[in-house]
Length: 498
Image (tube, rainbow, N blue to C red):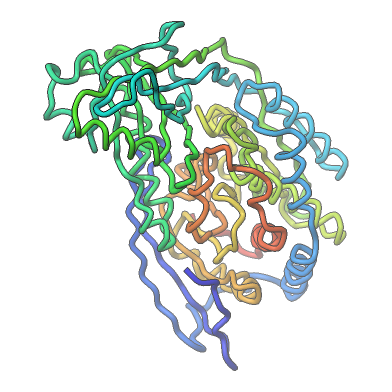
């Protein structure tokens, strides 16, 4: 997908994009996106009372210019990625990140508090896989398999598991084999990530198709007596990079070890398995330790007129441990951190409170967002809007919105400003992010930067999720979208339909 172009001529073109999106951020994750695009040059939406004062409109332009010319988000993302590193829930790095972000918000003069949540503490351990018997092998040799334990997996025996490998493409094929052919085997789910769909800009939809095997593969294989499960990586990388992520167990099914293998190793295993007997030795030594006390970082920039109403800007602070957690989701946290920093720089105080939140434990439990939703349940009506960034930091096309369609005309002045940077589109969908999801379901109008998803799933949950994947200009564009949107909502003269 090419970069969004400003196609306005002498009169503004207002482009409304309505999307019905069914996205289960829990697993299985299945996405259906239906886009209806209507462009009307010079047409005006249904008249509404004054939405933004002239001063607010001018201030939004100032915020945009400051964001696009600044580097706050880029520097903060760099610190989280390079200085602190991967921040898996329960790890020392996650705890350090909480302290760092809280200190940065205090430097801005915000009211900061840490909201407690108990999070899982899973430790990766040793990971080793090798093919030890196959048709045509050179005597006395083995073949290494590049793999990573899936988050939450149990361990193998200390000296590993050696067993025959069978390959299936999906759950239906596994079930057709039946217990007689699966029992005692290592099962590889060789479900292929749809790179064509990703290349067309719909990476999240491709991920939704693939990730169900990562989460549910161990349960399905164990029901038929498998001793371990391997899953082809749920991502677009073809550089022998393995993708990790959370997996699931069921109380009524035996737990078996689970690992992800690279695109290349899945291809090799599938090739050899077609020829005949294939055996593998798998050694995984992860541990699930007792839950650890952790925190959401919450920081308020108090509003001048309606301080009890709030607009949330947020990203999740935890990450997987193979890489640095740069695009998932150090970038999102950094972009949210930039919002109060920009307003302080410009000496702007919004009418409503802007609440920064760095969520904890999005990746393997959602404990942080659950704790926040529970604590704020009685004050949901005071949450004017919530914004979450969690799909990297590539060039934004605009923003997604989960809420009443009647609210779309309220955003036209904001989109007209964002047009100037190629980010003037608005997409209506059912859900915009897992951490603001509990608020969305309670009726809080929710938003997220809208990204082209052509490259995100090349790096997502892999060792290549590193700071060099963030372009300073593009993350500045994302910070502009979030800051302009947040300030506009915080200064909106009318309540949003909800």
